[in-house]
Amino acid sequence: MVDMPPEKKRALEAIQGSLHRMAMKVLETPESEREAVYEILRQSLKQTTHIVPVDPGFEEQYMSWLRALVRMIERGGGAQGGTG
Image (cartoon, rainbow, N blue to C red; front, side, top):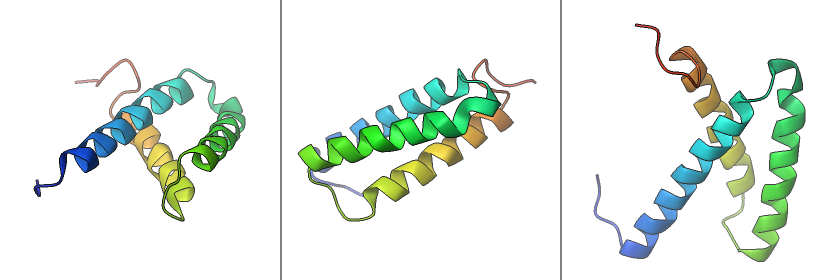
């Protein structure tokens, strides 16, 4: 991994932790209700980014990462773990 300043490393770790926690919340929700959960999370993120300034496009990127992480966890056997 590339060396980075400690504050950037902490920020990255916080984002990664947040993505994992939110992915687990999404996975607790039936698939038929997930779009509503994604929208609630998007609105919450939007409110947060008004308080904590972030780069333009962060909200969209975060949601893309979140959806990708949910798909990866599901393909790996879901929130309960792998199948083999």
